[in-house]
Figure 1 (cartoon, rainbow, N blue to C red):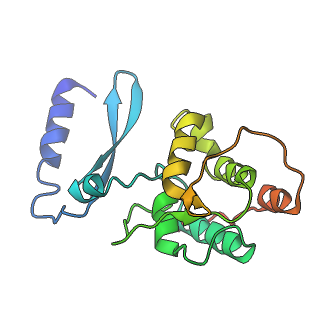
Figure 2 (cartoon, one colour):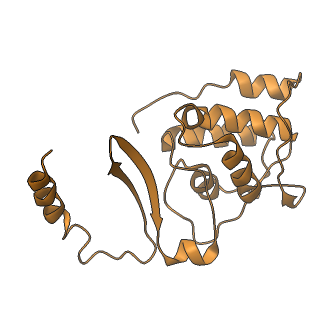
Figure 3 (cartoon, rainbow, N blue to C red):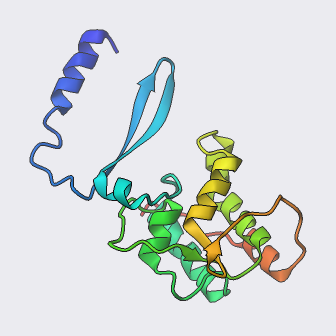
Length: 175
């Protein structure tokens, strides 16, 4: 794209958000940086004021609902964890609920790590999410027994719970 084409394209976008209510919005953008495309997340004041961190947008809402139902049914997350909070905190949706409460994790921290690696492994492989950032976000998005979840160092866990997570495959759809 030439410089003139870029300028014309940007001018055509100038009015895109004109008149829109952006008070509670979150805008996700991809910005060209040299030969790379860089993911940037821009949030509005409500997210900034609440300080609510969440995993980067990933996968789709259908997969998010399937993970939620599976984890609830298997007793991995507490009943106080709502679907809208799960979807937002895990990056399956960009819609922030009015009140965001952390996800209550009921099983071992190793099973939490397994689940996070399975859900967000594609972002880690693509270098859009680091393991250390995943650990930081886990502490901000999850609790275990009422305190922020601190993921343990990776180790193999031999249990039915670990097997259930490793064997769970959400149905992939375009919705």
